[in-house]
Structures are given as C-alpha cells and as structure tokens.
View 1 (cartoon, rainbow, N blue to C red):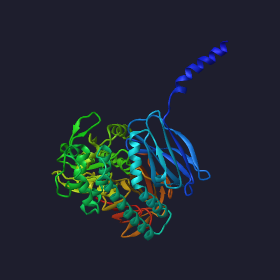
View 2: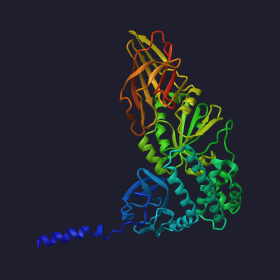
View 3: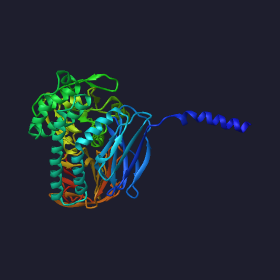
View 4: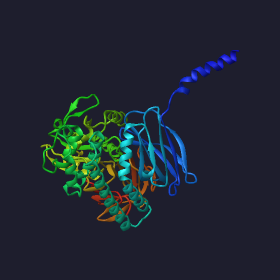
Length: 500
C-alpha cells in the first residue's frame, strides 16, 4: 500500500509538466538532393543562433523541434546546409506560445515550402514569400554555383547577375505595396527597401517608384518613427565632410540622457554599431587598448547601438566597455536614420570644432589609427638605453597593417618586439618574417611566443598580446621595418626609429 501511495504522489507531482503545453515546430521535408542538413536558427532581438541541426537521410528530414520560452520578438529561420556553407534562402516561422507550427514541402528551394502557424505575422510572411519566391529561387541557384567556383571573373559575373535579379524582385515588391493596405508590417517592408537609397543614392533604379509608393503615406504614417526614417531615407541629406554633426538623445545603462555635444572640443570617433553585428564586436577590444594608453584625453570613441535596451544591457554586461556606450530609444529610426547608416559598423570622425571629417563602413584598424594620429591621441615614443640595451616604448611608425608594436628591446644578440593584435580575430605569424632596412631583410625571426606558422586568437572581446624575437640588427642601424612574411597582404609596421 505504501508503494502504491508513493507512486500516486509522484504521478500527482508530475501532472503539471505532463499537462503543460509546449511550443513546437513540426518539420516534414523530402526530395532534398543538394544539401546535407536542415538547420533551425532562433532569432530574438535581431540576432540569430543555431539551435537545431537535423541530418538529411535519403533526401528526407522529419522531426519535431521544441522551441523553449517564447517572447514577442522570437522567430525562427529554417535553412539548408552543405558542409560549412548555408545558403541564403530560408523560411521564416513565427510561433505563438503553447502552439504548433508546421513546415512541409519538397525539394531544395525553401521558398516553395509551406508554413502554417497561428501567429498573426505568419500570414504576412507567407504573402511576402509568395511575392518573392521566384526570384529567391533563382538567386539560390546563383549562390550555389558562386560558392563552388574559384574563378574570380566567373564569380563577379554571378554577383552581377544576382544583383540584377534582386532589382527585379524589389520592383515586384514595390508594385505590390502600391496595392496593399498600409499597416505596421507594410511600413516595415517599405523601410527595408528605402534603406537601399542610403547605399545607392538617388541613382538607384527604383528611386522613382519608391517616391510613388511613398505618396500613399498619410501624414500620420509619416509622423511615426518608422515613417520619419522612410522620409529621411528618400529625401534626407546625407551627411558629408565639412558638415556639422547632428545630435540626438542617447541613453546609458541608467537611462541618463547624453549627447554628442557633451564631447565637443575633443576629436570624436562615433561608432554606429549593433549587438548582433559580429565585426562590430571584434573591433571593440581596440577601444580598450587605446583607452589604456590614455588616448581618450584627446579622442573619445563613442559607440551607439541601434538595438533595444535588452541587447544594450547584455552588451554592457558581457563587454564591460571603458569608452562611452549608448543606445537610442528609437533604434534604427533615430540617430542611425539621421546619419543614413546603411550597415554596421559605420564610423564618423568629428573634429574638435564639431565638423565631420570623414566616414567609412567596416572594421579597418588602419583607418582608426589614422584618426588616432590625426588627433595626437597616441602617446609619444620614449627611448632609454641602459646596460647596452635600448628600449623603445610606443615606437613611432610611418605605416602599419593589422599588428601594432608596443615596445622594442634591442640587445646585442637579438631584437624583441612586444606586439598587439587589437581585434579578436584569428591570425598567424609567418616564419618568413623579418626586420628590414631599405627594403632588404637584415634580421630574420627566430621565435614567436605562441609559435610560428600557428593560428592564434584572443578571447572574444580581448586583444592578443605576444612577443617576437629576431636576430640582432646590423651595427649602425637607425631605423627599421617589421614585415610579417614576404608577400603582398602580410602584416607590417614600418618606420621604427632606433634613436630619438
């Protein structure tokens, strides 16, 4: 009797979990010929993370995926993969808590698959897919060929062909938007397309058609944050060299308001960034590196996220930034829109008088250091000779690529460089490296602290510090260059002076 009661107690305790509903995606696919894996990617707050992989067997994939906790900004991509490559086409699935969504279909083209879900956004997503799938399938064919060919000319021709199809798809979408009722999803779709003007300018082939579609907007539509962004995309002035910077309300972790004007009088490097932007996160160790050297006395590096507060808080927690980091309550519709940011990271350089000096898209260490030099924000070199050893801290340079040299120690029998790779990316030091004078190698490398011809990478969010040892320099050397390897594209640090 005691055992029976115990079993009943366990059963009663389990009832909540047995009765609890789950959010699931039921997948049934067949006739898949070119791919090896069906992958599910979970998006929450803009960034995606792979959460499930199912191996395709005999052209089929059939499984049930349990989604876990669902919030209003969660959705899923289902993609096909082969090896390490995943291709651009996917099906988007919106899920409602405690419900089932289904994905079914046949063949290698995700746009041809059918998605059913009770989520209210799924009907709009399915409509969008039907409008675009003919073009998406054609672009998937191009992607597959392009990613398997090594001929540069052929690859470029495929890129051009893909761009042409993309322009045709945009035209069809815009024509469809002319006929559809305007709601929040309509505005989101339109805004995704008007962003192209920030890339291409008013010469974009469908700029005129976009203006026609814009004519459908009411004054109330235009007054919304996304309506203002669309208006600025189409008609706003693109900030250029010589213009005064534009300010906006920016918020820190405590919701205190800040402005770019707070830093006027210093040089500013404004980093328009995003939590889920990989390249954005890889370069941030450089900000810590420069601030440790006191660079912020003359140059302030200001990062502005286009994410919601949740992602902003996550970034503050994970990266522990030392430079100003803010977010914009209006996200992509705020200061990012005013500066016509078409991709992240985008950098704007502002001089102490508040004028924009230059801007660029992408993580270029060399361009950042050019700003550092222009602002006089890098510490001056110091020289010391003691007991026959010359030590140069923060050696001057005329040019460099990727690797920074923090200290040089010149001994009678060797030369040691203390170096930093200021980005969290993989790299290696070649055994062909050397020190050069007038273009001639005068001292070959003998060792590297993490090994020659071996990959090294700092922990995510950190710089990589290492030491290189070389043969002694010839007597009378007054300046030398470091070159990593002996071919075009290798790292270098040029113009190190031996004496002050």
